[in-house]
Image (cartoon, rainbow, N blue to C red; front, side):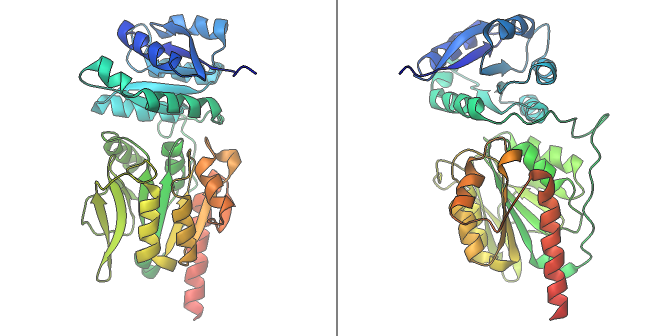
Length: 361
C-alpha cells in the first residue's frame, strides 16, 4: 500500500531557498513539493491548481507581503501554513503576527551559511510540516488589537492580597500556543497571582512575544530574568533556549533561568517548569496545559496534581494540536478539561472558591 504523501507548496522570492526547501522536503518519505512560487500572486494560482496540504511561506516578498497574502488566504481558502522568517526583531514580530493570522508555526532562516544552515534544519522543517498537515484549522479570528478587535470580557478583580501573593498560575504550551496564551492572559485582572509560562519557542522570539502580550493585557508580561522575584499581576515567559523553573527564597517565589540540557527535546521544557511548581508551590499552584504536539508537560502536570495543585487541560475542539493535553488527560494529570475561551474563567473561579473556603476556616 503506497503512502499518501503530504503535498507542499513552497513560496519564497529566493531561488536558493526554494531549491533548498524542495531538497529538504523531497528527501522525506512522507512529503513532496508539488510546486514552488516566487511570490504570492504566482502562489495563488498554484494553490488552485495543486490543492496542497501545507504551504511554506516567506514573510518578506515583492508584489505582496507574506502577511498580507496569509490574511487573504486564511479568509478565502484556509490551509495549514508554516512561515519562513528571518531571525531579526522585525522578523520575530512578523512571525508572531502570522501566528495571530492563523499560521500553524514558523521556521527561522539561518543568518550565515544559508545552504548548510537550512539543510541542518531538515528534521525541524519536516517535523513542522507534519504537524501542520495534522493540525486543526480553527475559525479565523479578528485581530488581537486595533480596529475590529473582539471585546475581551475581563475577569473580576480578586481583591484578596493573600490569593495574589500565595497562589501561582503555571502555563505550558507548544504549537498554537502563542494565541492560546494570549487568550488565557488577556482577561486576567491586574491583581492576579504571578504567572510562569513555558512556550516552546526559539531564542530571539520570546522578547517580542512578551512585548506583544504586555501591550494587550492588564497584567505586566515580560521575559523571565534569573533570580527575579515573582510578583502578583506579572507574567514571566521562559526565554527561548532557556529553561524556566520556580524556586523559593524565604517566603518569596523566585525565577530560576538556566541552559541545562533539553528535556523531552525541548528547552524551555514544560516538564521542568511544572516539576518545580509541584516541588515549591504544591497546592498553591494552578497548572494549565495548552495546545501542542508531543507529551512535554504531561508528567509534570500529573506531579503538580499529586502535589495538591488544581490542574486544567485545554479540550480537543479548541486545540490546534491536541497532543500535550491529550497525554496529560490520559495519565490523569488534569483536574478538569475546558475549552480555551473558558480557561481564564475557570482559573479565576478556582481562586475565588479557594479564597471563600479559606475565609470560612
